[in-house]
Image (tube, rainbow, N blue to C red):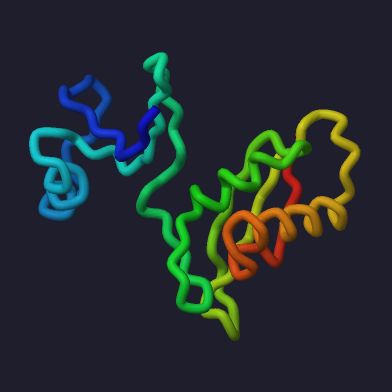
Amino acid sequence: NISGALCISQAWPGMARTIYNDHKRFLETYLTPYPGFFFTGDGVYRTSEGYYQLTGRLDDIINISGHRLGTAEVEDVVNHHVAVAESAVIGYPHEIKGEGAYAFVVLKKDSGYTQETLTAELQELLSKKIAKYAAPEYVQVTH
């Protein structure tokens, strides 16, 4: 049971080989962080049985009231809610905080949750598991 950055040691047929008009950026982003490996930009968790679970982008950071917060960290907590099948969290411009959290949520079939109830429960859950500032002001249920 270990987590870290997902890096790949061998080339594969569909991998990127450059960034258009910015090869230096390609090298710095994908090949420099872990020499000898291609850094995918994703976090990964490996179980004791050898299975891999992607945990989200490592470079997706939002800054809420001066607190740097990974969107994957927030998504992980949101996904532990009984009604949530999948989620995505992004930052949006906020007049006071600089950035705020906005959560897109896909509900499990026949969850029976209303937008208001789900929003309140997710805000409470995130306030307890991470911090009050991590709670999204907006939760949008998608299909």
